[in-house]
Length: 567
Image (cartoon, rainbow, N blue to C red; front, top):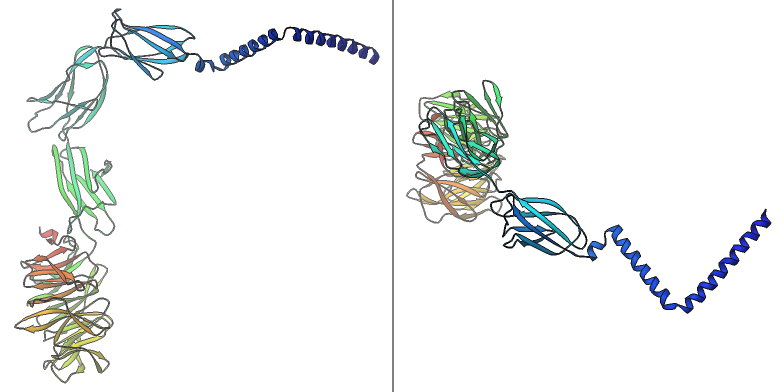
């Protein structure tokens, strides 16, 4: 078997060798002919590959001609034809032509006034193409909108169709809108009004004239702004809950910071707004909407901080809105707050002095003192009042109304005494300022000064100096450097000094209040018409007595505001 197979293979190979020899001999004799056949074969293969893979559309360009007519067969001139990003315009016969387009299936668009836009797919063949396009004339319609109600006087209605506002005619018991000529098709109608329930709906406009009638439902819109009562700055509540008949009402998203806008409220129903914000008291506002726009104006929020003050023969505490009012002490003689240090407030009621301590938002009377002089201070370390003796030569330590001891005896009359937050005592006579260390004294600075206030960091003492005829200048005495620097340069009737931090101070001249920096010596009048004031450390406001009533002053705008409940 192997032998015969090899013989057959041998014979076939011999025949193939003879064919190769013949082909080689013919190729030498007809060289040009074989070259031409090879080139034609290669080009044919390239063309077939282009057809198969679509490459020929980039190599072969073809024109497209066409004609645009109406449904009635009339030529449409001036129409814009768009194909493959190219644009052309039809001539007077409605004809158009594109010279170089790619063959394949593409979208052709035709636009012209008075006809519905034509958008269709067109198949472009190789070499030559022609397309007839028939366009449908646009149709128009008109609609009259009638909105019925009991009466339209003083009422407002806004109507839009496809977001375009339309003129509203106001008649006795209805509103009318005439659309004028519109293209037939689908439209969106929107009606909004502060007097009626808003609505929107889609409608189909047919050719010719039509009418649509709506019955309006009365409602009220509500607008309110939330502000800090004292500064009147906008505040943004962390939580806003609106209820009606104990049912929660969904409110829209707040678009303008601090401004609540609610639409289509039921008129005659009682609503309640509950507001919550960290650092402020919870607030609750009730209202009953009437038809139309209901403005609640400024809805004030109050800081979560109680205050203590005098009111009609009583020392009382409350929040700024007058809530949580507690009567702490009854008095018959004139009584005023005279000193605040940290959580301690001292009231002077003639010779009787009352010390109140604040814990959280509660005030408690913890001590009473009897002081006959006008120069005193509170030592917060031991809650002893420091005052001068009757002969002005001793600093007395008053423990209570019945317990007084001498802290230090001086060799001449003492002019003033203050104590810092650490319990260190400073005093002055007509020659110098001293620091009391145990029973010994250390001279700080020379000069005639009346000490008034110590800074929170205990490094500066405010004092009155260069005193004559009731007028003086304000000086700062630095306890570590032992220096004295004048910070006002025109003598005046300065009084009631107070620190705002360690750099800024308040002072009063007659009924005007000033604020400025002790390091830059620039002071500005911030309020007037006040009898006296007192500062609450760490607060964004302070309190004043003006026109025989307690008022609050924001440290932002310095406007005076009374207890809210008294407005």
